[in-house]
Image (cartoon, rainbow, N blue to C red; front, side, top):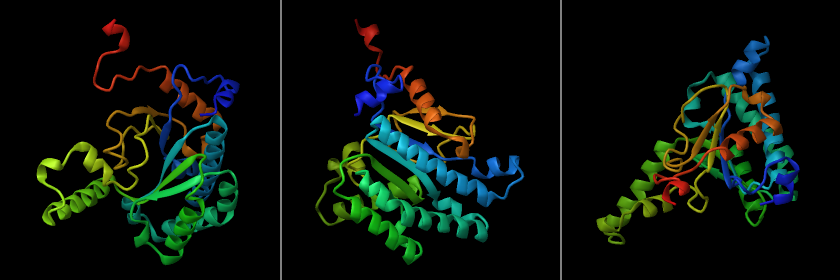
Length: 252
């Protein structure tokens, strides 16, 4: 954690600074509609907000950032919108990968990214491999992702291990199931932020968010910036995490 960077923004280590922040980036289309712009412009501005958020996360010393870029449910959108979104993703990787690598960012992807267009899956794999040894911000992108699907796939692999004799049913614990998820080495989110005023998880990190603090913001994602991120962290720091127990002062 970059404590000096946090002090510069008024964010210190005490109250604790979140280790892992997850974001549901919502409101690109509504932002555009409110301004009489095409939805494509909202998505383009949304990519700019991703850049600003990654930069701010690096400056603040955040260890893990996970963003919900494309849900497996999003395939039901109009073809032209999906085509534009895929184009923006390709453009982002092609234009930003070298810079992110130079900033020591490690890129991971969760979800069924191998099932999409080979050009996109190839670019994703290139980003993963190029940055796999980096030790700075861990940027995880949920792409073609469904949390229920992730859990089902984990259970299927466990069931196969039981069938083959590698596991006994009694061996199956919460920790074991978690180890079969898409990125088991990543700690659970401390803070989940959702923009656009919506108050739901939308099939995102259902298992991992068991004890996550939620912050729902009324701003649309294209309006999200460094100050918005800091405000959300300040809300998180004002809370007392209990993990099902009592606050420390109640135990004194």
